Length: 309
Image (cartoon, rainbow, N blue to C red):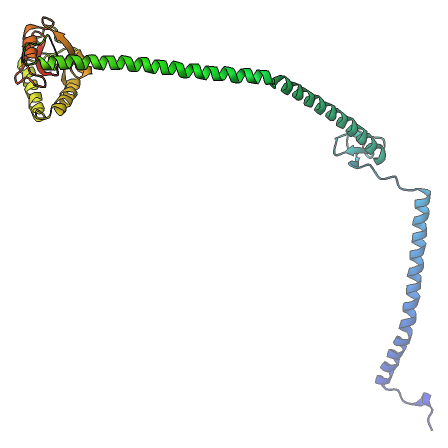
């Protein structure tokens, strides 16, 4: 009977055996490696602690300070730089606590200064307001003066208005009286008449110039022809006295060479021997509201006339 050692071994059996050996050897090897790593870590930590104990790190820099390498003055060395203030120094800056204390002290001084300034300003404003505030007596006096001024102004305006009204009324009454008088005597021979006229000058006038034309070169016939055209326009309004007067005044303002053009041709009241004979005869020969049918010739030029009174 063959022993186990003499039993034939197949390739598959050998691979199984190898696999079994690897499985049994693997876990033991892994445990040993883990123990070694833990020991190394503990040793490193103890070494670091010892180094820190013998050479502790410097205290933290105050807020805003940084350690920077020197590249110009002392290459290889370091200096301290404050990014907030721009300050540089070789020595370790003051601690955060001392810096904070100094800042607090400065802030307290600044606050006290601000409080004092504010108090002084408030006192000054109060003093100014007190001086500016009027007393009750001043207020009463001011009110009384204002009332008196207002009353005086009203009285003055009233007096002025009354005076102007009276003057205007007197003027109107005088004009009405004169017009009434002349109207009543229009059928007879009035002492004065009031007329509107339009003058056309020509080159043979005694002064051939006017506000319309500084040098008049029109012929006498041309001036007469222009007036006949105006008479034709006015004849359309002859049946309405108010319309006739309004039309005459508008034409006079633009067509008359007399300075009375700015008044619509109004010459006002005038008596005998105040105008050139031909003009006087034509004016006194018209009835109130009547317009000349023909052109009136004088040394000043040629005219058309409308009697108002």
